[in-house]
Image (cartoon, rainbow over all chains, first blue to last red):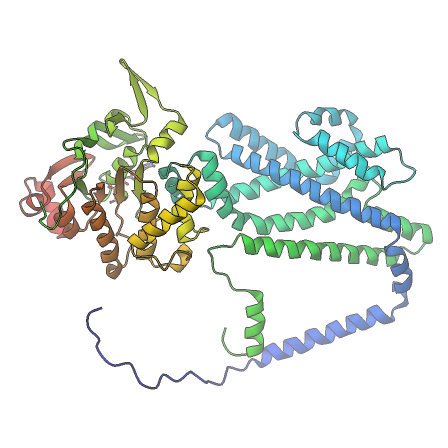
Length: 315
Length: 265
Ligand SMILES: Nc1ncnc2c1ncn2[C@@H]1O[C@H](COP(=O)(O)OP(=O)(O)OP(=O)(O)O)[C@@H](O)[C@H]1O
Ligand SMILES: [Mg+2]
């Protein structure tokens, strides 16, 4: 501007005000802490937990192998689920009515059938295995990969049955996951301002390039958080493959120990701790992914919330 | 003509945009009802008209973001969106359309910068991925362009960290990075706070001075008067009046032009 009206006030001293007190907040904190303390006390003193027994058995080698299978199943089914989900979402948004209807039918079917039912179904129809072979581009390679993986870990089970069972479980989980991921990805893509598409096109970018460089990276911000939830849900749903049946899975193995020793409760607690630990690891991964894809946006961190909490005062 | 300008005339008399009876309808709503006009190379045409008169639609037809229903539209002597062989028209492939779009820069009312990229990344994206320029060369040129629009110190800023006027100047640099032969502006200053309009218009004025062919939809009469070589007034999907900007603004011939100008001036 060309004119200055007045000189700025000489003493711009920083504000030092007494923050608003929140007595209710501290009462609530005290109550929560008290309840927590009671809970911890119960954990330590109640004999039913049998902590030592649990510790000795929660890390036995069949259990470890089971945990590994659960983790491998989670990762593979999410990789397949996400990839296929993106394809289905892009098909769903395609101007071609045949493609979009097919995509709709896919999501309709796989979201309607409960995972347990799908898994039992896949486990019982050995024929489906050969049928799915040509449907998924990498399934033979995956199978080979897994075959080696699993043979190395299991004793006394026919590797052929196991391979089929594992594949059935993996396909059941991955195909149903793809349906949910398709909806999530579609939501993410649709949330992007059409002006982004237009700007990319006006620059001479092709459709696939626009999708890859402009639309998907932005959609990721919307896609990643629910995908994190899906991954965590998937980790837990791997316990369902016992219905296929695939028995070298975490929960089944823990239960087996409990049943064999007639001490099921500590092993249930062990299952909780296992899932808590694995989920926590996944959440760390999710945190970094979300950070990566929030480029160019400003977000308040939870660290800041703690700061404000202890600082009292402002909102 | 404005006296402050000395456009360097490239290939005199060549026509950059020629529109012959262009029609466009969305469903049953006819938006363009036969647009006839010409933009000479190196000239600046300003488009003026009430909301809904089809200005944006016409601009979008020029780089084939919309397909026209009837008439002929030429850019640099070539048909937009089609190839003519004998009497027959053949639709261009998507990749051919994209290649032609790459030669036409477009600037939007709402900037449409890529929010997940910094200013420089926005500018180098298309040269690298579409023109396959080397990263270093594109970055070098990108820096020069950002400096040219007065944003040499904002190279690493994300769009969300820039004011509207700065974002629009990045958007102009992004379009220029493709070395376009034609620039389309769709109300580039309408979304800006009044005090930021000037910076953007300055950049556009410099661009016009450097000899760029421009089609500008704008309600900035001062800009149209000073920079424009022609001013076209559109209403209801037709060109109502066109001519030398000062002439049209001070001495409009048609009632509709008069009515519109009396409202905006
Ligand atoms: N994709 C579309 N589908 C349907 N109708 C459309 C579409 N795009 C534009 N229109 C209609 O076409 C008419 C002209 O729109 P256009 O955006 O070209 O007007 P404009 O002159 O740019 O107006 P403004 O000054 O408000 O930007 C409007 O009535 C609008 O509703
Ligand atoms: Mg418009």
